[in-house]
Each structure stands twice: as C-alpha cells, then as structure tokens.
Length: 407
Image (cartoon, rainbow, N blue to C red):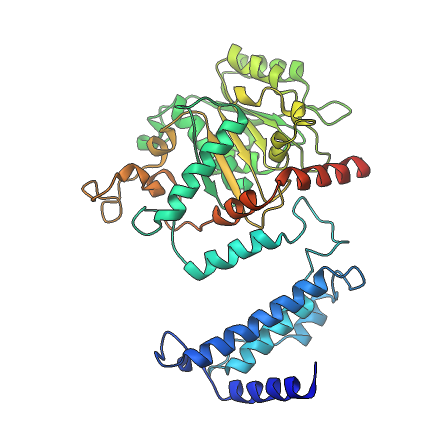
C-alpha cells in the first residue's frame, strides 16, 4: 500500500469518527457518499478476513479463555451511540478473535469451510432482508424454495405428487417437523384436542442417533422415556432385529408404535443404518419411517456412494442439511415429506391477517401456513446459487475422503 492510499485511509477514518447512524441511509436521504464509504470499509475488512482465512500459515483461532476474552472486549451497550468508525473497529475486533471456519486446517463437527459462492448468497439474502411466509413479500425466493424442495425430493426418489417440504432453522427443527407430521398423519385429532384421546405412543431410534429425536419426543408431548433407543452393531448401524424386538415388546406393554428414525450418517461415526430392512419393519407394523440424513444427505449426489442410503426412497420423511456434506453456509436444513399437503394440514393456523384467500395470485404459494414459525429466514438462496454455480459432487467427494481417512 503506497503513501497516498494510506493517507486516504486515514482521512476516511477521521471522517467516520464524526459520522453516526443518522448520517447514513435510510435516515439521511442525502447521505449516500457516507453510506457507500462506510459499507466499503466493512467489506474491505471482510475481504481481508477471507484472504487470511484461506492462508494455511495463519492461525485457525487466536484463542483466549472466556475470562481473558471478556477483559479484552468491550461488550457493553453504551448510553450514547458510537461513531461509524467505532462500528468499523468493533467489526475488526470481532474478526480478530473469531474462529476461521474456512481455514484449511479447521475441522469441527460436520460443518466446515467457507464456500464463497454460498457466502455471496447469504450477503444478498441479508441485504434483501425479507421473510418467507408469503409470495407477496418474497416472490422469487418462495418459487426458488419450491423448486429446490422439488429437486431434493426427486433426488431422494419420491414420485411427483408426493413431494413436500420446508427449510427450517437446522436439523433438530427438521426432525421436530417430521415427528409432528407423523403424529398428525396417524392421529390428526391431536392438533385440536392434544393427547387426551391418543394412546401411549412409542418412538424408536438408533442409540447413536442425534439427541434431537429424543428432544422432539419431549416437545410434542410423547415423552423422552417413550422414545426407545435401538442397539447398533460394531459399525454403528442400527440392528433391525433388535428394532423388531423392541416394537413387539412395546406393543405387549400397551404402547402404539408409530415412528422410527433411521440415520443417514450418524453424528460421530457417519454410519448409515440399513434403511431397506428398517423400512420393511415399518411397513409390517404400520409405522412412519423418518431418515435423519442431516449429515449424510449429500451422499445422494454421489453415484459411487449413494448405495449407502439405499432404501431412503421408502421413507415418509427425510432431514437433509446442505450445510453439512454439501458445504453450504450455516444454516441450511430441509425437512422433506413424502405426503403432499401434510405440512399444511399439520401446521396451518389460518392467520387471516397474513394468509387471506382472496389475494390476486395463487395463494397455495404462501408457504407460511405450513411452518411452525411465522417469521422464517431465507435459507434457500445461498444453496440455489451455489448449486447452480458448481458441481457440488466435487465437495461431497472431498468430504467423503476426509471421512474415510479419519475412519
């Protein structure tokens, strides 16, 4: 950086020291130059962070213990507003101590890397700052989500007319959607009157499954004690014969078995349960089959490794997190349902201030009434733009090589 560039930076910093929130858009309609300068200064910080993150010679984290970090950071909310320069400095300070999750040597639970195309998608999403509950407020993204859900269901193997789903805030909530949908499918009166007329329900899941399955049992009122863990073999896969034994035992004890969760990539070992055999048991005892493929859903894009999830097309629902094996930015999770319209039936509350039926367009595109949320973040664009821009299979293969290496 030459002398003139350094002088310009210093001048801009001095200018920003005397500028505040009310000097930029939207409060100051004539403040575009200050607005542009401020945003560009923050973007420059982010670009430098991206550059450093991808340098293998930098640290993954400048680690400090909590008490040490508290002493270094000023986290208080001040009485008076800070200057725009202070905002920029705060951003720089945050990045200084943040974990570089895109670093070549960063390895953490399941989500890793900083995919720049997906990141650009998230930047645009934040800039647009819209909701996902109606077509009128988010026309492009609602159509985009519908298309991506359709594509993911097709990849799972479900035929047209049996494809539904929704993006949710993470795999735990996607699993919750699945449990709630399964109960509604078999006991629809629960939505209106609760569990008073419902028999004692039993759920079954691998002992190595994600804790959110038990959490969903608690949240919907079935109870953690009624979610029975099924033993796994030496490779971490659910043992189908043990599942059937537990189902038979539950029936003898007065339970109504209704839900089984098979895992498409366990959290610790990456094990895939034998879905075909589990599906046969579910069909025999009339139980809903859910596949939690939050970790391993991306395997469906690999011709070489897709066989690990054989039978997934027989599932009633699937959790698939593109922010894991596919490498999209956090968070990006979909709950896919092989019963078109069930999410509407299960979650619809008919809020007429939002979901009027006399709008001048096809209101079936208003997706908010099939969500348990009202406000819902747009998690689809960063996936859509990334999926179109590159062959995701390349990243899937890379992550699989890492998995096999650590195995």
